[in-house]
Every structure is written in structure tokens, then in C-alpha cells.
Length: 585
Image (tube, rainbow, N blue to C red; front, top):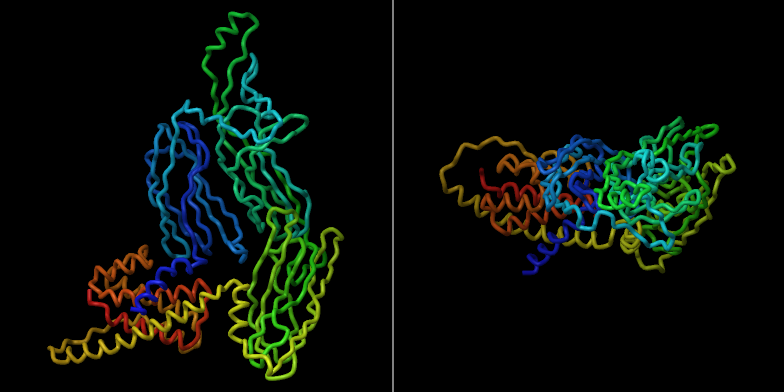
């Protein structure tokens, strides 16, 4: 049956389309883990406005001797702005070797309960040969310290042989000005290290310059000495306000292995040769970093831009049909604080009515200062005749090199309106929707979902009428007053907020399932809903109807699919029919 085939396709793709939701997962330090050597277990929440709690599972196999919360920001995949990242870090040790399993952790994010997937980690047996493996990718030789002499200690060797160096590109900067900060471990001692803390940066917008901090060590020369170097963190910071900042320190724990240097006589050297190695666990912290942030002189720019920029106006359609949608992009290019830039004020010509722009960033994160572009895409409807002339847009910014305000000006953009051009309103909207972050397939899926739901709804209404006629012949029961969980969605539809209608429809269905079948809020997923309805004895066709409705609502809310009054109304009618078909608990 074609409808069933389409339903199956839509449901299978719903998970792929549900982007933008908070993500919660657990992670264990990479590298070789040894008994008695500390490592980290992290529970990470990406996205969400408010993280109320992160609760780790019971872990009897490890001993927790430190924990802390790390808050930062990261770029949303696809360059669609920044997202909050909150990490609960546990510094632990495990005394025995083997493979261990960490169960599911829980987090309360924006009032909803999230559950992480269980993960496994392995503690290797000492002496397996993995402890001291290091990269030799650089041809330069690192003269590793393997012995200590009488009167020396491991601690006394750390300042010059195993240390963390924190550096910043500037000591003083302006609000919004880019500053590169890096934390690197330099070592030439046999050691097994684990990161206890990577610094967070409260009061700054943060762009990571490194994708993978677990890469093998490289070789770097400092003051004529070669060291193995590990990059602990490297970021570009954009201060949000003026003030004096003491940046957090990075810290690691290392287990250093050395031996005692031999004595002067042959007998002493022979005895030392068979001596057991000396191992010591040490804590290493980075040096202090201070940053002074100056206020922008005479206030600030309306765009929040600090750096060096150029701007332009562009469109894919120089000639359009009357009434079609015209996509126009205002592009900011150059180097600077792209994450903090907002759209400039635009004096649109008479008759041009635009909504808030779609925003997209294309950044080269590994380059300092941050380079790339930020695109603000607008859309408006073409007039019935004539032409549209978009004026020059002035974009103000502060240039920290010249310590002055500057203005970049775009080109003027003329768009002709002609009856000779075929109506490409839908095509223009879909095509530019792709560049603005809304893939074309979303509109197809929304249309398919609407057709499917409408078809199923018709069948259901027929079966409902038949069921009602049969119930007329049975003994009438006293009606029970029930709460209409779809009432808020009906009100939202009446008020014309169609996106909100989809949100309230889904909320009403979850509340109905929770009330009738005691569906736990943690199981408010497609799989959880299917299991609940199957256990309640609902027919397979009705379950598919419920999952198709869930997919439609998910597409609208999280994938940015188009909706209108007809789609929202059909979704509401389908939800009403679905709830009425639920068996009584």
C-alpha cells in the first residue's frame, strides 16, 4: 500500500530531521588508562537554555576524588550560531584492570529529562607496553629525563621538564576584540598524564580553534630544548564587557617514572641497574593569565562588530515575476567577532516588507583573528510591476588596529519585475531556503505528511461514525467530564500562531498518553509512544497515524519545515481523532 510505504519512509526519517534539540552524552578520557592513574569521566549537555541537574550513575568500579562543572559555548554544527555546553567532570581512579561499563546518566534540561547512552572503558594491565607510547612524527630528538641524581626530586625537575604554559595573544584588548588563548603541556619526562581541568571562560564568547585535543604529542623547541607538546586548549575569546579578568588555569595529573642515577663505583651502578623504577603522582597547573578589557570609546556600534569588514548585497534573481518571493542576502566579510555581530538597521524602500533574517556563519576557526563571513538572508514579495531598488546599506564597526569607528557600505541592488518571467515564487523560496539552512526535502516531507494525515483522518472519521452508531444500541453510560488537552492548541490556531499550534498539539498528545497510560516523561520519544500504544492494544494503523503526526510536528518545530493554517488545522483534527480513538485505561 502506497500510504503505508510513505508512512514508513516519513517515520524512518523523523529522527534525522529532528535537529536542534539538546544532546546529552557521556565520555571517558582517550588514551591508555592504567590502574591507580587518574582519568576523567565527563557528562556533557550540548544545547538547551537551562540545565537544572546532571546526575551520574552508580560507578562502584571507580573512586571519585574530584568533580566540577565546566560551562562554555560551542558553534552549532552547520555554523548556525552558538550553543551552551555544560559538562560535569569527574576525576577518578580505578584500581584494577579490565573492561568496565558506565550506565545511563540523567540530566534535566529545560524542564525535560534526558538520558545518556551507556559507555564502556578499558583499564589496561601495567607492563603491557602501552604506558609510554608517544609520537615520534617529528625528526628532532627529545632528550627524555629518565633518571634523577642524589639530592634531586621529581618535583624539583617539573618547572623545566614537565609544565603547562598558558599564553594569550594580547594582554589588553577592547570589548568584542579577538584574543587567542592557548594552554599547552611541555614535557620531556616519562609520564602518563590525564587532564583534570580545561579552563572555561565566563564573560566571553568562545570559538574553539582545535577539533581534537587527543592527538599525539608534537615536538616543539623552547629556549634551545626540544619538548613533547600536547595542546590542552586553544580558543579565540571575544570579551562581552569591559573589566579585568583572571583566566582559569588548566591542570593535569601526571604519573612520572624515573630511576635513580648510578653511583660512582661499578658495584653501585650494577646494584642500581636492577632497582625498581620510581613512580610519583604529581599535579601540574598552568601559569596565571590576566586580561584587561577596555570599553569601546564613545559607546559601541549598533552592529556589535569589532574587526575589519567589507559588506555586499546579493541575490540569485535579478529579474522576477510579479508576486514572487525575492531572496536577498546581506553578507559581512573579513576578520573579527562574527559570533557577536547582529543585523544592521536597513531602510527598506516603500512596499518592501521583510521578516527577521535567517542567519548563517561560514568561519575558518583555525585562523586568528577569526576569518569568514556572516550572511543575513531576507525575503520579500515582488510588486505587481516595475522594479525594486534596494539602497546602499551602511555597516558600522570598530577597528581595534586604528582604534576608530569605520563604516563599510554595500552596493546598491536593482531587481526587475517582469510578466515575461514565469512565476518562480515557490522555486525561489525553496532554493534559497536551502542556503538559509532549510533543506528542500523538508517541504516535501511536510507535504507528504499532510497528504497522509488527511487520508488517514478521512478513514478514521468514517470508522468513528460507525463506532458511534453501534454505541447508540448499547446501554448509555453517564458522560465523564475530561480535560481537553488540545484546547491550548485550538486557541493558538485561532490566534494565527501556527508553529505554536504544532508545539501545543504534541504537548497535548504527550499529556493524554501520560494521563491515560501513565507514560513516563522520560519515554516521550517515537519509540516510547509506539511501545505505549502497542501495550494499550491500539491498532497498527492508528500507531502509524500517531508517529506520522509526531514526525510532522517535529519537522515544523525543529527542522524548520513550512507550515500554514491548513497544515496546522489538519494536524489538529488528526490529533483530535487520534485521542478519541485511544482506549480507556
